[in-house]
Length: 64
Image (cartoon, rainbow, N blue to C red; front, top):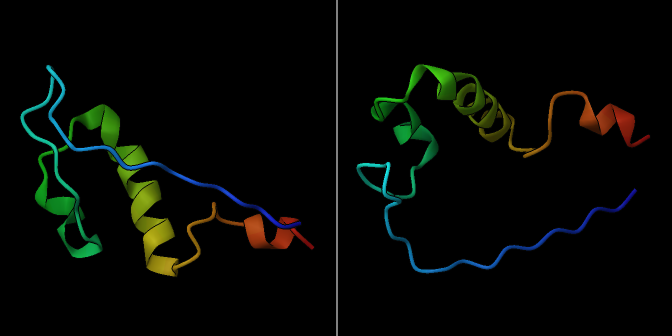
């Protein structure tokens, strides 16, 4: 199955409830003091970046 997705980037500006907004490299991802409820999502993103697929674990197997 082919998947296509797109994104439109807009100028970055912090939201009212955030201290700042910036792009992070995989090496910088844990330099941020994440809220406890954000840590599971950040772990998932870090895992996807580490394996280079950008897909959830097992997604490649599902495509066959």
